[in-house]
Amino acid sequence: MLLPWVQANLFQNLLAHLYLIPGSSDWSPYLKEMKIFLWVCLLVGTIFSSTAQIKPAEITFARAREFAVAGDYAQSIKVLEILRDSLPQNTDYSIYLARVYGWNKDYPAAITILKPLIDSVDPPEEALHVMVNTQLWAGNYEEVIKYSNLAQLKYKNSYYQIQKARALAALNRNDEAEDTLQEVLRMEPDNKEARALKTQIFQQRTEHIALSYLNTSFSDPGFKPWHLAYLEYKRDLGKVPVLARFNYADLFEKQGSLFEVDAYPKTGKNSYLYLNAGAALNTPLFPKFRGGIEYFHSLNKHFEISIGSKYLAFEETDVVLLNAGLTYNTKNNLSLNYKPYFTQTEGDWLTSHSLALRITNPIKENFVQIDLQYGSIPFGFVTSTAFTDVTSLRLGLQYRFRLTKNILVQPVFMYEYEEYFPSMYRNRFNSQLITILRFL
Image (tube, rainbow, N blue to C red; front, side):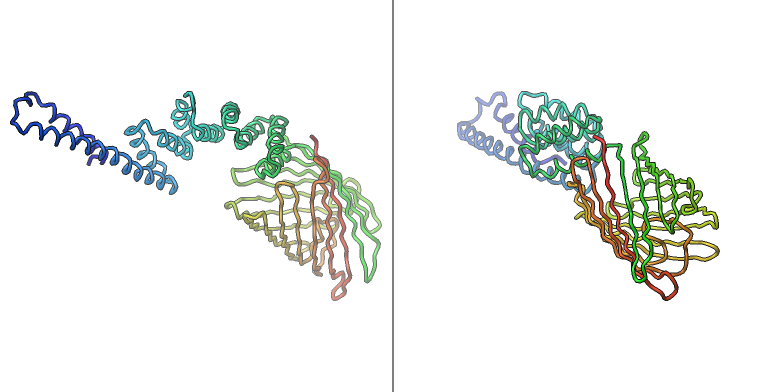
């Protein structure tokens, strides 16, 4: 079946053909009236053709967009190609066709369609917009910079500067990316996208030094405070974040130290591992050897699950800790994490539970977290073999904020109502301060 605007064109051509039949000058005296009638028909046909050409095309274009929104890119492309071939002068169809090709990850096809439009004397802004996005999705970062500069020169839109900054960051040209974003923020101080991207680029710094001090005090009855500190160095080895940490403890009137290493290799697009290994240097406080592994997997943008274990080899006994985790992330930068722990020592199994509610500000790189814990595992980490079936109820609060451009500070406080002996309780106060220095 012919499209309506094609039918209209055929009708117009037929009228013209009838009017130009050879020998028409020999027709009857009614020829003059026939000529007028044909002219009227031709005019009506032309108007009808124009109208028929526009309305069905618009309906068809709307249908193509519906296919694209539904994710049926192949069908949308088929319809759009017919539209483009029938009405090549309509650039909207070509640009949207390029956009759909990009969504379908056929970036070369999208770029081929867009290039003649952009190489014209007056390139449409939408064509430049789609070209910048397509080149970014394709990973052609130098091309992103090129077309972003062209678009910004002509249309003065901060969107193109932000896309340029993304490309610069992808090329590890972070200083240039930050300068570009600073230009945006000079003109638009409240541009959230620019501020968030600047924070993301800053977070890509691969090195930091962290210093932590934890004081644990007791009351009713009192007990000599515990002290624990660590010095940590982090950098990326290839694409794997690696942390080396030196721990020092003063507990039970004994001193000791532990050296450990953490690594976070990716195992897939939506998964990674936490690996840990450490050894005590000169103390019975820490395990002679410790090792751990935990697997994290994002199910979607809202849910993440994990499962892991730790092995602690103390002088007197070996301890195995098993844990699992479920994290729920909302659209409003709120996350809820639940973790059950199962500890096996000397034939006994002990359990504990941890619940954490975190509110994050990704632009300022701040977060506030509320912790609720119940069970037998000490706060934060295990330093001794003091595992019993007594339990503690813990409530904690921690807050991280940026003190300067490259210094983050994180105070942590946790109160415990601790059963230190069956049916005997005391108060325990854990106060910790973590300071992180990022290298610029």
